[in-house]
Image 1: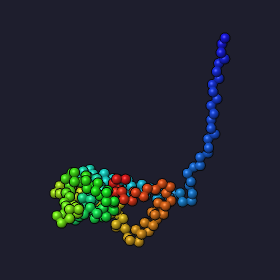
Image 2: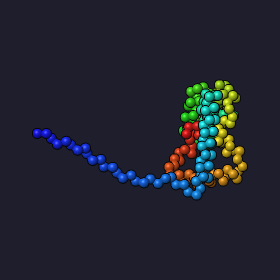
Image 3: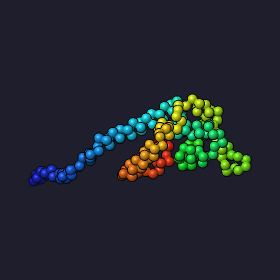
Image 4: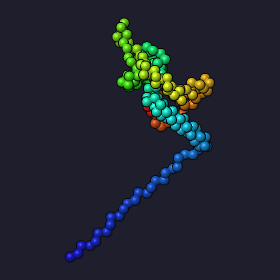
Length: 180
C-alpha cells in the first residue's frame, strides 16, 4: 500500500517588525558635518602615526616617550607617565620596548636603588633627531596651540558628547592615541 505523500511543512514567517530609520532630527546636517570633522581628525592622526613608524621604525607613542627622555636625561618613569598622560604601567610597557631595541637605558641611582632614571642611547637620540615632528602627534600639538578659551570650550563640549554616548570606556583616557 502506498503511503500518502508528505506535504512540505508550512514555514512560519514571523511578521517583520518595522524598523525605524535612524533619527534625523533638526540638527542632522550639522551633526553629520561634525562627524566628518571627527573622521578627518582620526584619519589625520592615523596617517601621522603611520608616517612616524615608516620614518623611524618606532610607534608614535614610543617616539613621544623617547623624545621626552632625550630632552630630559635622567627622567623618572613617573615623570614620563605624567608627561604622556598615561598610567605608569603603560609608560613601563613603552619603556620595555624601547630598552629591548637599545633606544633607552634604565639606570638605578646608587643612593636609592628603587629610583630608576631614563636615558636615551645614542641610537635613540639619532631616531629623535631624524623623526617627523610633532613628536607628541598632530592632535596633541593642535590642542596645545589652541587659544585657552577655545580649549576650555572644546573640553566642555566633548564632555557633553561623551555623556550622551551609549557606550563609553573611561580607560581610553589614559591610552596613547597610537594604541587606540
